[in-house]
Image (cartoon, rainbow, N blue to C red; front, side, top):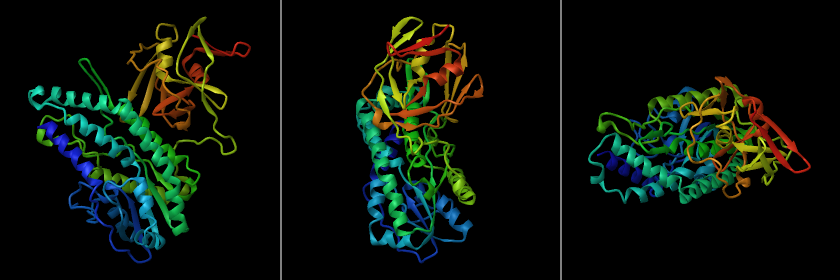
Length: 432
């Protein structure tokens, strides 16, 4: 049944981190070296029988053929950033990297995925199959609701936070080590995607927001690559729209798959994007814009008083480089009964937030909750936003998986007033 297939797949993912196959022998100079995890290894494609089998439909195999290079695929299923860093200090990897003309990297997803699978497995072990009465929408909804509750628990959030922090700590070290070994090779980096972008849904009383939860952390991985001090050393390919083996809402249970790896079309897309990035050279870069190098990022929780139309309100606010930043849903909740109210919709497939002035806002329970200080996690966010169907230029930062937008930008885009009383240190919001 469906639940058993989920459990079997989750167990397989965890097992991939334990018995990874050894890397192949070093190729001669002029080779193409693929570094990374199961995505780089071509996991799940026809012809994949374990690491180093290099199925011809894998993006690394496609690139090697089209570039006329000899592939030395050192990707290992289950590999995390710390493991890749360790491998780069072995003779085998060092020799391969030092002689390569081209190096691709797919790493980071497992830093959050593998620990998360441990949490999910703990949840699945308590499931009683009989309680669901067979397969179907109710069956899968119950499983997804359990999964969301586990992932968004304190333990889950801490796990994702730690995974992102680990990747942030290791990324520059990985690039520095590669450049130490090989100053001249072209380096192309595969971006990140959310394989479960369809899992924001409401079924009955169940409000499941797996997509939104995961999106914030996927964005943090991307921001790390985009904002690196060494970002001029590589090109970066956006693959947020990659197709995967995930098949959840299917009428035929035998077609069900929770496998997050790219399918054949997905690998073709990754190959095309990496090849295009290499062709365009270092002009190809992610949309995320880092803070100016000569302007250090100053972030702290704001303790300023907030007045909305003359009454005091509270919200989670951060002062970033002298400006106040609010969560979008906090502002929507504060203004929902005013003349400046607006609706908030999120398209997980395109990652676009759509705001409609005058629209009705539906609270989801996450609003106006002030958590612990997340200042140290702040990175510039590239979250796309549309207002009344048009692209909006809004400055935003991601803190701990949530996007915070500059209050004055929101005021201008959504037609409400923003002012500041310096004598009383009060933020003034006028909804009109």
